[in-house]
Length: 151
Ligand code: DAT
Ligand code: MG
Image (cartoon, rainbow, N blue to C red; front, side):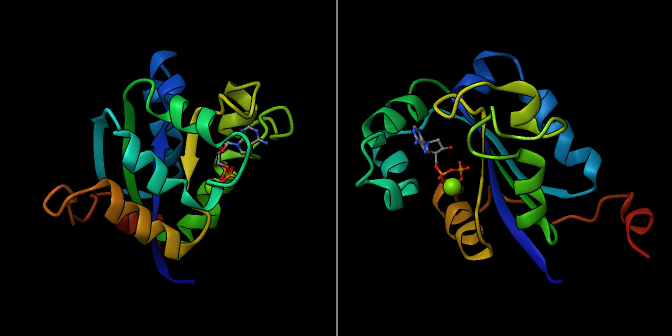
């Protein structure tokens, strides 16, 4: 397994519902490293680019309205196997099918309000971080706990 990067985003419903700290904690407690974090009001063009693979779906206009309806919290996270692991922490797209213990399983009830995004591949992790963050907004650092997480 390799060190990878993933783009995690608290969607507008997560921000409005006061779940930002709770959601960040899930990744922080797991032991991944945060390399980027900002509160951001997303322009329509960026939302459309982020979700471009879904542009033919009937729900696409509603998805774009939702993502641009209020501030989001943009995050970059790094770690060995972080892409797949973060998707597991997040849970299934439909929160009613997401397992208890996952973010969506614990905190949401509807696909259209599923509180959080996570990249679905290492390539998309890189693509999405480059899309949502400018150069200079990411930090390379070594957490003090690093030697206690990996032998
Ligand atoms: P995920 O966010 O789990 O990666 P996805 O990439 O397939 O899921 O879809 C992106 C978002 O689009 C998803 O979080 C919520 C919305 N969405 C997906 N399928 C939907 C559907 N059938 N109806 C309404 N919204 C949907
Ligand atoms: Mg997806």
